[in-house]
Image (cartoon, rainbow, N blue to C red; front, side, top):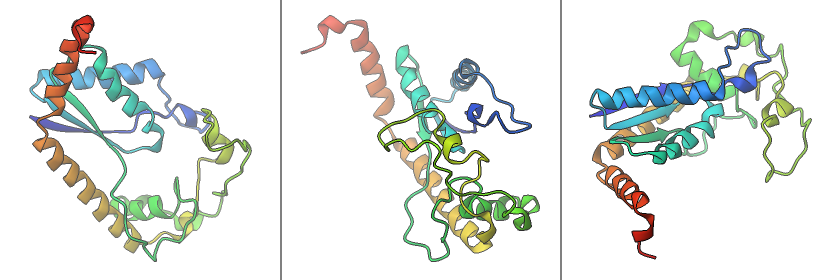
Length: 206
């Protein structure tokens, strides 16, 4: 059985914003683990976590890799991002990472009642560049250093047309991922092989 889990987990770096509920790292990982364990206990042997948040792009691959800590009779797959699109003339926002043109356009399709384009200019979505380190260096404060209002880009140039194109691309990407995972016969076999070898590391051919 295959099952999909949609998630937005890592919010600790937005805890400076009013109303943010930021759970501890340990609790986030335990929630993910107990959820996937329970899904497997109920018959799901292929579990897709569909990422819905940029802040999860380090946490979720770590969670998937951590499944190799002990044997499981199921596989966790992480899906994030959409297939690359040809240059869309509607897309004009150079930054466009959070609440910018694309995300606002998408929300115009999924929840149009929440979109207020007249408020898009009340805060700056410009890169503040407060932490000018080389691209090869990562710190946990990078996002806040660049976008302290958690706004990146210009939501004021959003459009329903771009939102429809983006949504179709996302749906196509997730459908493709589900087809590939349903057909996958190697991941669990290789995972079991790995666990068996890890029980007898000195017997592993060198």
